[in-house]
Length: 228
Length: 228
Ligand code: B12
Image: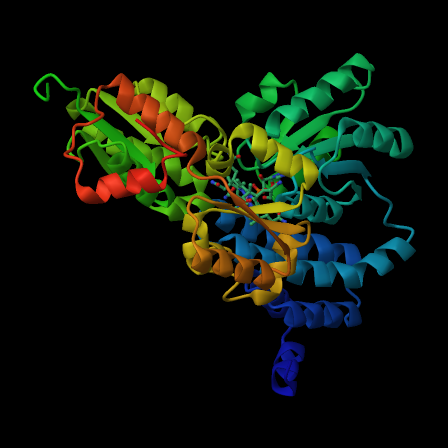
C-alpha cells in the first residue's frame, strides 16, 4: 500500500476509519483492512470490539449482498481473505486477554463424500467472530470423525456442511448415530449448505438450519443462551 | 404414422444441447418430432436459477406437448426442480448431475471412491473451460483464488463423450492450469443416451427423420454407444 493512502487512513477520525475499513473489507482489500485494524489497535480499541463491530459487521453485509445476488463467490472469497487477515492480527491479542473467554465450543465439518468447504470456512470464521472456539474437522468426514471430535472436545454445538445432493443424506445418518448413542438430546446439531432448506433439516431431525454464515453465528449464540 | 405421433419437448441445460442434438440425429428422430429448448449453462454456478428458468419454459410450452423431458440432473436445486416437474407432469434425467449420468452412477462412484479429490470435465466443459470454470469462478480476475477453490483436489477427470485429441490436449492443459493430475476416461454419452433412447422408443419417434448420409455415417462411427 502506498504512503499516500497510508496518510489518508491515519488522518481519518475513528468513525470514518471504521466505515473505511468496512468498505475496504467489502472490496476485499486485504492490506488496507490489515492496516486499518492496526491503526485502531494503536488507538487503543479493544480487540473484541474491532472484531465484532468492524470485521464481523462488515462481513455480515457481505453475506447479505451475497444472498441477494449482488456479490458472487469470488468476491466473497476476497472479502473473507481480508477478514482473515484482520482476524489474524486480533487472535493473539484476544487469546492473551483474560476478558476474552470463548462463549462455547463448536465442532464443524463437511460430510463424507463432499469436499466443498468455502461455506463451512465462512461459517467457522463468523462463529469465531461471535466468540466461539471453532474446531474445524475439514472435509470428507465420516461419522467416526464427528464422534471422535465430540468425545475429545465436548462441543456445545455440532455443525455439518454439505453442498451435494448426494451427500446431504449423510447428515441424517450422523444424526441418527448420535441419537442411538444418546448424544443428540444433549448436543444441538446445526446443518447448512446451499441445497439444504428448513424442511430437509427438520426431516433429518437437525436442531437448526443455517442459511448463511452471519445468521448461523447468531443462531449458535442463541442456542447456547448468549443472545437473550 | 406422423399424424398420431406424440409431440415431445426436451428442456435442456445448455451444457447438454450439442449432445442432445447429436443423439437426436443419431437416433433418427426428426427435429420437429422432438423439440429442444435450452437454458444457459451458466446456471451451473447459480443452481437457484435452474427451477425458475425451467418453470418459465414449462409455463409457456407444456400445453403444446404430450410429453416433456427435462435434461437436467438434480443439479443442486435442493429439490426445487423435482417439485416443479411433478407440478407440470414432466420428468428429468436420473442422477445428481451430468458427471454422474455421463459416467454412469457406478463408475462415477468408483472414481470418487478411488480419489475423492476429483474434479470432472466433460466435452462441453473442456470446450468452455475458460468461460465456465476460469471466468465462472472468477479466476480470471483473481488467479490467486485457484488454491482456495482447488486445494482439496488431486486430479482432473475428463469424462470424454467423443474421441478428440485436440480436446484431450485442452483438458490436459486445464489440469495443468489448476496444478492437478490428469485422468482421461472415454465414457461416451452414458445414461444420457440410454434415457434419450428409451424416451424416443416409448414415444415411437425413432426413424421419424430421413436417414441422410451424414446420419448413417455418425451411426456407424459410434455404433458401440447408441443404437436404435
Ligand atoms: C464453488 C463450487 C465448487 C468449487 C469448490 C471449492 C471449495 N473449496 O469448496 C469447485 C469448483 C472445486 C467445485 C467442485 C465440484 N462441484 Co461444486 N459448486 C460450487 C458452487 C458454484 C458454489 C459453492 C460455494 O462455495 N458457495 C459459496 C458459499 C459461501 O455458500 P454455501 O456453500 O452455500 O455456504 C453458505 C450456506 O450454505 C451456509 N452453510 C454452509 N455450510 C454450513 C454449515 C453449517 C453448520 C451452517 C450452520 C451453515 C452452513 O453458510 C455459508 C456461508 O454463507 C456450487 C453452486 C452453488 N451456487 O451452490 C457448486 C455445486 C455445489 N457443485 C456441484 C458439483 C457437481 C461439483 C463437482 C462434482 C463438479 C465437478 N466438475 O467435478 C465437484 C465436487 C467434487 C466433490 N467430490 O465434492 C453441484 C452440485 C450438484 C448436486 N446435484 O448436488 C453444484 C450445485 C453446481 C451445479 N449446479 O452443478 N465446486
